[in-house]
Every structure is written in C-alpha cells, then in structure tokens.
Image (cartoon, rainbow, N blue to C red; front, side):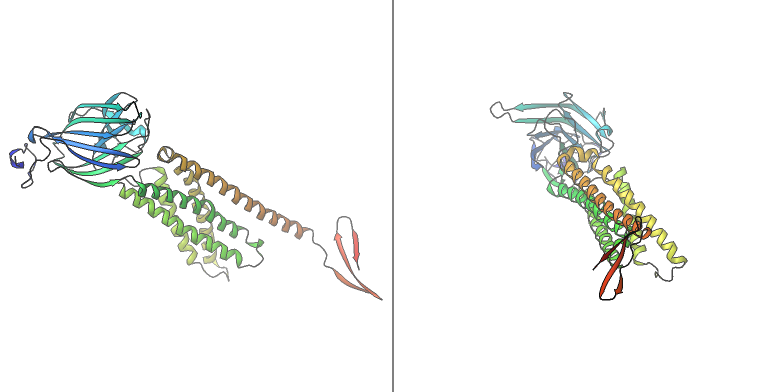
Length: 392
C-alpha cells in the first residue's frame, strides 16, 4: 500500500512513500563503543499512528531508547536489570539523580528479557515497547544507550543517535560515542591539567622570584614563554571539549565545571591582552602601577580558579564512571605536578631567604695587604666570632 492509504489523522503525508516496515521489522545494526547494538522497528496496523521498537545489545547491562537528538530533556524507555522492570524516564540532566521515572500514556506493552548462552556465558538484553507516533511523525531521531556490564545503574558506557525514516526502513547514524569523543574528552583533561597545573604556575613563580635569576631578563623570558604556552594549550583543550559536546548533541554551560571553565578562559584572555599592552617600565607612573595591579591580581585569581576547576572536573560523575581509570591517572599526575611545583617554590624561597640573610650579615670583601716581602689576603669570615683568617 502507498503512504496515502495509511495516513493517520494529523500526520502530514510525504509524497509517494511505500511502507517497507509495516509487515516486517526493519533493522539497523551498529557498533557503539565496545558493543554491537541492533535497533528494529515495525509500523503497526499499516501506519495507524503507532510503532513497535526493539533494541537488542549483547550485554547484561541496562539498555535504553529515547527520542530526540540529545539525552537531556528527553523521555527514554530504559530496561534496568537492577529493578527487574521497564519504565519510562524523564532525563532532566546528566547525573543519575536527575533521571526520574514517570508514566507516559504514549508508551505501552513495555518488556525486556535476557538470553544467556550457557556454553559461553554470553548475554543478550532485549527491550521491546510500543509507542504512539503522534507528535513525532514518521521521521524521528532516536537515541540508544547502554551501561556497564552487571546489575549497575551507572552513567552510560556508549550511546548513538539515529535519524530514522520509519516507513522506508532507513536509519542513518547521526552521532555515536566512539573513539573521537572519548579522545577529545581525554585530550581536554590532559591539556587543561598540564597547562593550568604546571606550565602556568611555573611562569608565575618566575615572576615572583625574579631576583633569583642571574640575568634580569631570564625570568621575563621564562614567564612570557610559559604563560603563552599555557594559554595556547588551554585554548586547544577548551576548543576540543566544546566541539566534542556539540558533536555529542550535549548542552553547554549546564554545570559548575563548564561555567567556571568558560570564566577562566575569558579572564585568561583579558590577562593576555594586559600582557601585550603593558606600559613602559620607566618611568613608573600611574598607568604602570594600575596595569601592574590588574595584571598581577587577575593572574593570581584566574590561576586559583583554574586549579580548583581541575579537581571539580575530575570529580564529575561522568568522569568517575565513564573514564574511571583515566581519571585516576590524571589525578595522580596532578599530584605529581603539585609536588614538583612545590619543590621549585621551596627551592626559590630558600634562595630568597639566604639572600636576605647574606644582606643582613655581609661578608667582608678580601683586601690585598702588602707586608714587605709577602702579600696576603685578609678576610673577615665570621663577624659573630670576630675571627680573622689570613690566606697566603
């Protein structure tokens, strides 16, 4: 039958579409992360306004199917083996606490079952339900996801988005959480942790203890190089996570870490503008004093804010669940950076204290004394004891 013979009331008819999925299930298979997922659907009653959906995954974890291009603010049907039931959920945010069970009359006959092969102990989980097509039509965006193996209700391990033409039996992958997304998240974490956890603090220490450098210009070159490198690396890391979120159809600036990160990058840009527009050092007038105050205070402030945001990001539920091993390694690397920066700070502080002590207790400059036949140096090397040593 043609599409015109099966149009339910209220659904606009596309021209000349034959229903290939009215008498049989149409199927789309794809590898999502480490697992193969199979999405099947059949338009019921020759297109009278509902369809049956089936999601199968070779895993014993929870699996879910929702409608839309992003998970947040969508409604999904999730089969959780930890509660032995199939429910509809409102996904109000990214954390597990924001996933709330609800009843929706558009969803019915929901069920799931697991098949286990005794010889290999391999498991397959199937989710089946029927949904009214009112409000979504015959061309829909479908999100599928699955969790970690076992009876665990945790952040999804993989997800994919399909653009599905229900009548023609065509499903194109719009996006999936594969290697590109994972590598972008990891690269973001590495670049931000290294730039704000080591490179930037190193440049700040060079500025604070500038007097400890043998040549007056060396501290400035080190400060400028480290700050420039840090801004470049953090800008790359910031851009990568923005693109990864866009490709993953995820919302931006909806949590503390991303909001603080955006503020850090804006302030860092302002400080960089201050740096390239600094007034002449001499004579040090009002403009130079104001510039020095703003450049210094903004620099310290953004460094403290960025350092705190590193740990906020690593403590996110998404990082703890989805990238647990990687997050632990980054945390260890961050602690090592703290130890190294602290050691450098203590070394420079000791040099400063030694210089202060030497200035308060000056050592006499050797003086050439002519004593007839022999010349010798007289050096007062211990002012507290008053001893004088002669070196011939």
